[in-house]
Image (cartoon, rainbow, N blue to C red):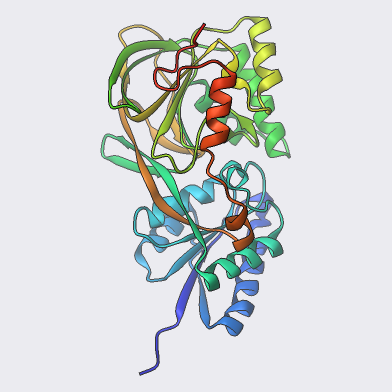
Length: 346
């Protein structure tokens, strides 16, 4: 009996980059098919007419590996397609944003290099076990790889999504400026299980609240610089009050350098899970977003799934990959934070 060949499924976003996403996806399919003729695997394109159609295809069809082509929205599709199934996910990061790929050290806007790395990962069975967040809101349950945005961060993302500016990072930065000028104090009631198993319950009246699995958002802003991909935990980050002008300037100065949580205007806790509901005071929080995709409104239960996602990475990246624990611990110590309570030590 002839053994069954490995099947690589590809999903792209034909509407991205002013319609050029379709051509990029075709390029990836062609490159993978050429590699498949050498290495003995087949390639199938499961791209649908829109996000939901593509997600349905990726959930219902049989394959061994899934490759997504595009930005963080396509990573969201891939994460929700393979979930905890054990099927490896390959990422060809193109367009703007690409915060998840950036955090993993994957090539961005280099299609040939990305595909070559994925082929090498498939042939050598090279992958990383990466944490995921799981957000349950009503009947909706969504996996996410990057961040669940619940406040100002969601409003910024929504505004950037509807912007006509040509560059993704520029769209996000412009949205930041507009939303900062119209900042609201949203009302959250938070009950979190911390890293040591203890419980912290409080009202948080804040413009910003996010539950992060990765460090970056908005094309490289390090909103959660202590986050690790493989610690089985998430990071709860919020603004402790509406920042004044010097505090805004301090935050902007540290936004890309890994020092944002050293700014005392930010609260932080490392959590295993968190329940977020509406507080009695404060403004109604906006629609939540996970990896740039709309999730719904509060209440929401969020928990970490440790190393539940298998991500295909080039062997060279795997060899150079180092556990982020040392860097995260160094940053926490530098900023004089208590690693359990999240409070400043002085």
